[in-house]
Image (cartoon, rainbow over all chains, first blue to last red; front, side, top):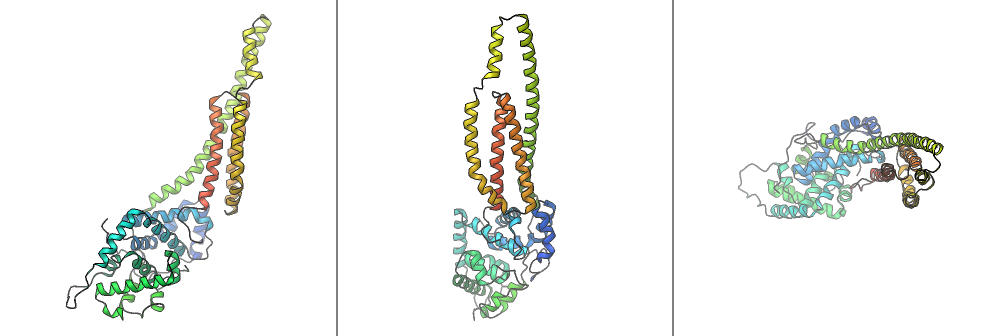
Length: 200
Length: 206
């Protein structure tokens, strides 16, 4: 399937946004939702859908897949509200579920084939010649074209600000592998976008 | 994963020196708007889960009502033949056919053995899942536990009502079906609790 461009339409301004709602702000809605109050859960959904969808879209690169994963994330969250201990912010908890949903989806055979094609295409992207005067690729588009492993790490670490340990745990990889993926992502992005200084 | 910081820090502190790429990544919006409203489909699935409870409770209440009406109707229908029989006996003591019908209805229950075997199987299943049900229930908030216990009591009360009705009319296929349905409802109830506590795909610590 062809990849769809990441629509850069922020729901709440540009980055860096707030780190997610503090639990205190969400606490009453969470309590009500845990009691089965769908309206309260919708309010939580409205507040957090942008972050969850943004993460899913960058991880999957496909609008439809991102929509599915976002929906699965909130349905799973609804079913687990009673177990949410509040040790992290709600947005972080939702991100965890979202990553799981994306990885589960990508474990399917069709998704693996799609990734194989996209990884090959990404590796084959030509470097920009030194005398190339065309405008550099849009960063979002360039991130989108990264291979899965490198992109996953770049999104979690570079955009969403998680540590290597956290990203590695989320993705089910070793921390060293996570660092290697990020290095590769930075190299590919630098090459594709003409940011040679990033390689230094 | 700990809470996400205000700005990406890992790429600044753990890997390469901060550069143009990191700055540009940090400026990317973390929140993107989906092209369509995803809530209606999510809500439909939430309603499905909640509605399942409501349907179950509604069905249980309906079964109880049917059972009660069945018992009342049965008692009325049995009273009338007995009165007829009494009159018939009074008029003629040689009406053996009516004796046979009356005796067959009141003194034997050809379905008793089958029903007892089926009930024993249900009880074994119930015993097998009830312990895990109690463990699952313990993970839920107290208020939810109370509500769920009430829900289960409704189902069980409905079954008890139907059981009494079956004692009076063991051959009634509707009551037999309703009786089996209440067992299925109880099993569904246990399954719902289990799936609520362990949704598919959520493997992170909560």
